[in-house]
Amino acid sequence: MTTQNSNNFRPVPKTGVIYVMTEAAKCGYTPLDSSWANLGQGAPEVGELEGAPPRMTSFSCSINDLEYGPVIGLPELRQAVADLYNERYRTGFKSKYTQDNVAICSGGRLALTRLVSTLGKSHVGHFLPDYTAYEELLDAFGTFNPIPIPLSSSNAYQLSAGHIEQEILGRGLSSLIISNPNNPTGQVIAGENLAQWINVGRRTDCALIFDEFYSHYLYDTQAISHSAAAYVKDVNTDFVVILDGLTKNWRYPGFRVAWTIAPESVIERLASAGSFLDGGCARPLQVAAASLVTKEIATQEAQAIQKNFSAKRDYMLKGLHSLGIVVDSPPQGAFYCWGDLKGLPSEVNTGMKLFQQALKEKVIVVPGHFFDINPGGRRPLGRGKYDQYARFSFGPSMAELERGIKGLRRAIKGFA
Image 1 (cartoon, rainbow, N blue to C red):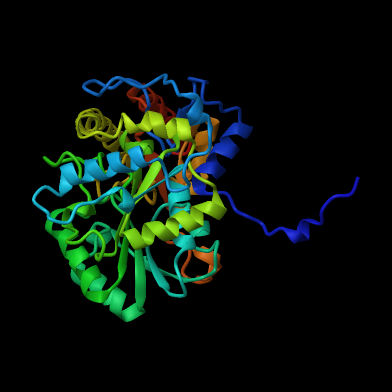
Image 2 (image 1 turned 90 degrees about the horizontal axis):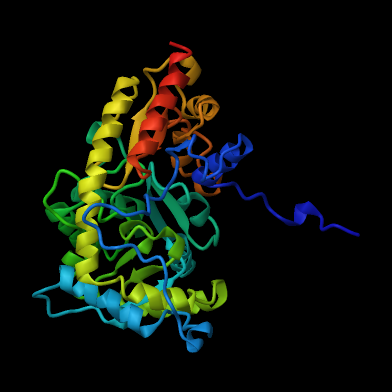
């Protein structure tokens, strides 16, 4: 039997979460082994939460639902998403979203993949640190130049609208990808600041692409949720693109149902991209999802998330502090703590060193260097800024967080 020459295939690195989970599996980790604490996971706990709607654990479908669905998504689900955003964020606006402003696909990474595949020759801005999967995503098609915009702990990983305008004009950006709340820092662009960002995008003709998958996870605020949709003047002429789905905000990661909200002209392009990239989201799951995408369920879920995850956030912050890990900007959203390890003993004061020692104690974390995204390896200099950071998830249950902090204490104490 002959084998294909491996030189025909380029090496494809694992994203940060996939890397740490692969290494943990080599050490015996399985999701069902309750002796482990997975503080590296990028998913929330999926079980019952106090105050949350009942979990959907079964659904039925008709014989027709065994057929292919439309590449762009089922009309009833697309309209449900449009209605949700209009009811939540666009009361009083003349311009409303319709199903023609919505595309459905199988998960957030695929939604982003479809979107970036439609970008032409241009400069696309992204932030540092940011979501690990952006690294390969921003290099996969080679049709645009990714331009990094570094954030600083001295400014609480935030930038003003004025600074953003300078970046757009100075670097010639045509698009800007923004995770909001940010993964991994948990910082949030909201209220008047978010309105000003969208005004800047409108003035400079720069498309703003908002990854809002954590928009129910808000802390120290009275807001139930937030979205750039609240500040769009015209849904078809403001080039604001919003990505969200059931994965985080509804706590159904296994459904792999996500949506993109955008001007109709963008949605048309996403339909074309989906026709060759993936062929569309599973029809039975879209049928089930339509009953979950209502204002009532979304509000109940957001309120339950904020109550339960606020307690977990506080526990994680207190636990990391007790270990000598500094969270210089406590998360305003999402479910991660971005921890500075510089004060730890030298044997565990980088993300990779701590990760390796934590595995011995059956704890998983994500080293910070994975969030220093560098599409195509275009930045040979200046790397290593986040080597002494790690991301700690408080997505799991409180019991798992408690095991995780105890395991990290053992890992660090051995070198104290």
